[in-house]
Image 1 (cartoon, rainbow, N blue to C red):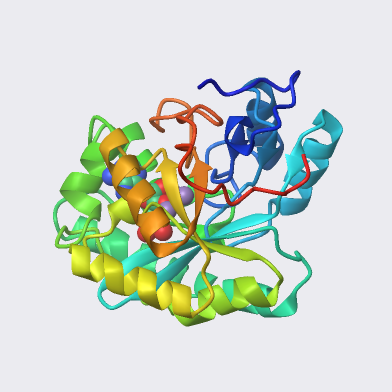
Image 2 (tube, rainbow, N blue to C red; image 1 turned 135 degrees about the vertical axis):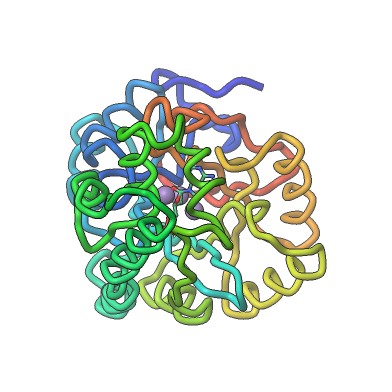
Length: 292
Ligand code: AMP
Ligand code: MN
Ligand code: MN
Ligand code: MN
């Protein structure tokens, strides 16, 4: 199966080039919202959602650019959740951008990122890394959304590590000097805010969580009980094997499947916008029935 280009409009939903997970400078992506959308258009994407972490600040610009370029646009966001001791990401799609409850939830999550960033810089300094706070901040398009990606970019630019992945492995993952556990929002509030705004809640990149099979089952069970209806199967964060595993999980749990690149920046992300493999035929795409 091949992914169709914009010129053709395939009837079969799996064949539409859909990318429902990507980032811009509104959170930790390197391109402005309009440039991410233009890149998606150039890559043949037909339906897209910009899903910045904990903010909808880039949505209007993305929506307007998509409209001008003839792409179907779906409002999106990726919400940070604390579930037990694990950070979980929930993607919200196709919601009302004006919904107050969702905006309040996002504002409450953003609160605290600045203090966390200061703690990260201090933690790194205590381990002999020069103070990187201002440089990390200079990579953040929105200071309220400062996060680990901005630190990783700053540390690579300084020559402290050879690539982003090395920064994460050495400094920014649990147990490492620049990692600070952070209390995000609850799964219940995140899913509730998305549903309250009329959207669809999608469990992002499930293979990334450090959970056992039972842990995954418990997470999905709770997610479904709260009203979550979809799960990412094909994502830039999954290997082919992980995509196969979560294809089965989606079918077993009766969840719709999503597809997204999780694109952050050229040269950083494994997959370009719209360039991940198609969804397996056996799954039901979350975009089934959406206009395009
Ligand atoms: P934060 O929300 O500040 O904890 O940052 C999380 C972000 O860090 C994720 O959304 C990814 O963009 C990025 N990230 C996490 N792990 C890695 C990794 N191993 N390599 C590159 N980027 C990563
Ligand atoms: Mn990110
Ligand atoms: Mn994520
Ligand atoms: Mn993401």
